[in-house]
Image 1 (cartoon, rainbow, N blue to C red):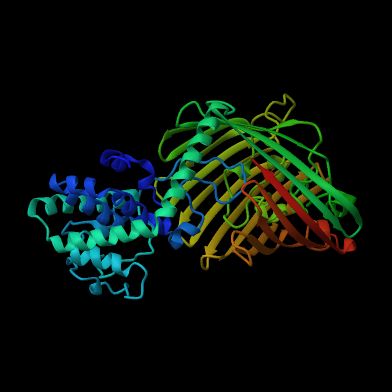
Image 2 (image 1 turned 60 degrees about the vertical axis):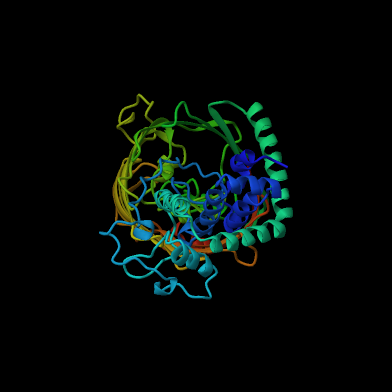
Length: 569
């Protein structure tokens, strides 16, 4: 049997784990022998121990369950979904101001509720009703909002947690000073003994698992790749077939080294190799010019974004990010891609997890394929003054190291972009975009809108719209351009369809709507179903349909099926 001191300081007893929070803390307190219990009580230590545990249970259980806001994918950084998306994890936004939920300031609370029945949004059938009733009516630790509601499903901040915990500890001190009624003490003691007996086996199992985790963590630290560098890998293999093409395998491998010399910087180095594989849609688009294929000269709107990757190992990304302040990140590098910094979307932005076609991953007018496909030298700035507003800008040159005329860092090709993002709520986010570029002797100005809206926990809609102005003789297609193309996509993102943890989606779009290129308009359609079989492996069957590839009606309709497997570590 452990001593009282060891029980109070054992780290596993304070782990917050969903609904089990109240169980873990309560059981730890009751793991005392009768003799220890009597000694503690004689020293007047028992009231402090018992009340701290029971009151903490009531408070912590309010913070342990996930809210709907937590599902939306809005994390502290820029990463939006599962998988190894190469986006830079910029610093988290500053914490929001304190909510009045646990405040005792008269300016924030109209009236102190003395009964849980005074909260209009709390019903006796709610799972947390008894906990709130105890905390409000018995101990007076928490209260509701000025409008008479509790809003129990809203996410809690660390500040609010600290405020609630401080209120509980103050109540413990008051209880010790005023000798709180033994009736409540006896009731709490009976409750905690019952919890100890009921969940004793669960607690033993948890301790065993924690000991195993501690052992594995020590082994991992002893054999880690580097004290400053993290190695990440990703292998995508697509088995694909379609109209006018033979069954083929498309493969792409990436190794990413993320190095940090402090808590405020990140050096990204990425190597890439493939098997130079193609797909049915790409084969049709390459018949005459490849204007809108995955490696297209005007847009990335092929069937699979990870096709046509050369079989030799090459440097794909190399850039360094510094965070001079909590709300500002500055990136410079010799190999940067616009998609890593702008035009993100929680439902369609990762070819390893969600949609496979480039048109659904980025707006082809805002993210220019000539720059994004191979990357270039440049700089990017991300400024997030608060949790709702973000501003991003970048400049990237495709042939910065060239000494040829009209080439170099400020020559052809290059792209300069700006993006303003505003989060109206946990459900709605809107981005306004602008790109100025010079590609193949063509001056480009484009305006874009990127929107995403969560209908509920498992369903959301997204869309992108771009309007451009293309002027000049394009040396890639040998055509004088005077165009105002339009690009648009619209789709639905789904989660937990049939099997928990799955991701699915369906989308339709047109990458380059104009009368000046081709005799028709290419239309893309894609649907997929992602099954995550483990933390490292996923399988995704997908169906793609491309009508009038490369804006050419003579090519008809190309259908394509793909089984994409992704292995990451």
